Length: 373
Image (cartoon, rainbow, N blue to C red):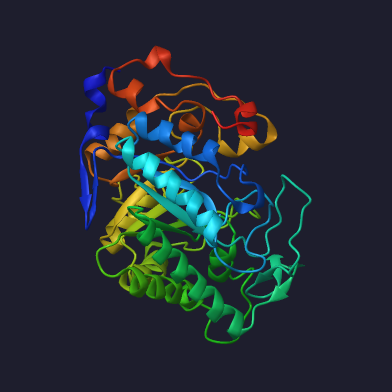
């Protein structure tokens, strides 16, 4: 593949107050290098290197909102409190100085336990119905007061992102964590207005989070929502089994104030609804864009062999072709593409792709997870 064939990756993108020099997004990846929840110089330098490597938009690792049990690892960074926010101010200033754009991913882990540590928070974990998975209790069912406080905490974090000078904010609504636990009927068995038999009804919590954040940041600050069909608790789960169900799920969230849907698949090239005639094999991000009209980010094992979940069991991967990705961008199936492991191990991945230095692309070694390269 020649460098000219990758030009679709290097077209500018504009939305509201956001202007990107290319379509490459650094995917949010949990790193757990923030003792006491405070991002230090090592984290600022880590993101600065990706900005210097010409990543169009950097999305931070998951950063947790101001709730007593919002994180499941003691080294996940806060996005609240004077010390943590001062650390994030240093990060965004360094990224901007290097010519980059960035947003924090705002997160609440819900009742999910980390498989990387046995640490547990001092406060009881919370979730829609006190479940970590169908039929598996863990923690407490959230009261309406707890839900209201959580909505307010997301809004406060979004305002902090804007105030600190970040370019966007992303809401983590995927992978079986708190917001996704409200979406999933297996973990949301509530009978109040935050539950229900339909996916649209169970999306009420997410809609209130989004509306509150939108009110806090105003109309021109872009908000991204990361979503997934699959859960870490069950890879085979599909929240929406048909395009109509997906429309019922996502359209109200876009109407609530989301600008970009970040659609997580384990393998981005797989069609979302293989049985639908005439869809040209649209992936999750392709269907989300078609159904809602919102801009979308696609993600899932881009540029490397092997499924990204294998990294957590020690699997390494080699560089893989991005031809399929380029073809999908050229036909506007989605707007942006998030790169995970390839950027985690090689800050200059984007520069190498643009210059055609494919022989210089690095393998991904799972040992990279233990350091900030």
